[in-house]
Length: 364
Image (tube, rainbow, N blue to C red; front, side):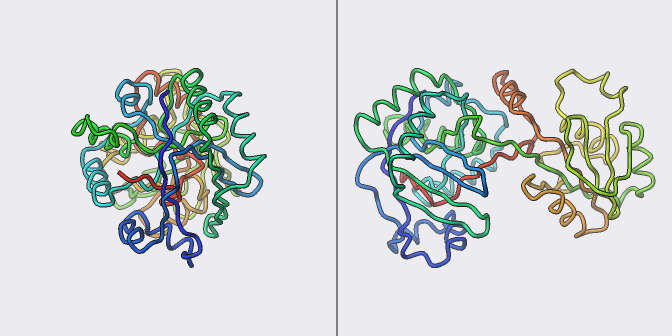
C-alpha cells in the first residue's frame, strides 16, 4: 500500500469549552471554526498514531494519506455499494469545507513489525494531543511521527507487508475522493485522501440491528404465525444478544423472543449465507413486504453499541414497531465478501472504534 504523510490541522483545545458540542458540530461548521482560529496547522507533514481508549479496552491505528489509485486498482477494497445521492451530498460538503474532517476507517491483516513500530512510539513519547469525550466515555490520544527516518520506515513497512486494505467505515467519503481525483488528475492534493489504518485484531464488528414498522398492516398474532414458518420462536424472560449465528432476538409488544432459523430454511441456503440476508429475504420481504431495504422508510437501524436498550427504546416510540437483534458479521466473512467483490446489505456492520469529526483535519 502507498501511504503518505500529510500536514494536519488540529484543534486548539484551550478554546473549546464544550468538547461534545464542538466535535458534534464541526462536520458542518468547520469553515467558521477554522476562520475563527479554533484550528492550528502543524509545522510539517507527518504520520500520526491514534489511540482510542474506552474502559479497559483500547484501539491503536495510524493516520495518513492513502493513494486514490490504490482504491481505483482494488487494493483498498469495499463491501458496500455507494449511492449517487449520498456521493453528491458528500461532494457538496467536501467542497464547502475545503477539508476532510474525518478519516476513512481502513483495516488490514495484522503485521507484527507495524504493531511494534506503533508500540515503540506510544510507549516512549508523550502524545501531542489528548482529549476526553464525556458522552462516549472515551479518551482520544495522538502521537506525532515527523522524523524523516521514521516516516521512511513506516512507508516501507506498508509497501512490503500491507498488500491490501478494507474499508470499514467511509465508503462514500472514499468514492467522493475518487470522483474529485478523476476530475483533477494533475493536481497533487486530489491524489490522496485521509485514512486511518487499524489492524483487524484492533477492530470490533458489532451488530447493526433493526426496528421495523410492520404491525399497521398485520396483527402481532398473524405476524408470529407467519414467522413460525421460518423460525423456531421461544419467549425469554431475561433477554441476551445472540451468541451464535443463525440466532436472533425479537422485541414485539414489550416482550422478547428468541428466534432460530428452521433447518428446512438453512438447507435451502448456501453454507456461508449471512444472517442479515436470511432476515431480509424471509422476514422483511416475505412477511412484511419490504423489497427495497436501501430506501424503505419503514426500516430503522440501531447501532449494536446501544445494546438491547437501544432496540427497545426505538421500538417503543410507535405501537407498530418490531425490534430485531442480529448476530454480527464475522471478520472472516467481512474479508471474504470484500475479496470476492461481493457486497453486504446496507447497514450490516458497525465497526468500533468510531473516528471523530474534527480531531484531525486535512485541507484540500
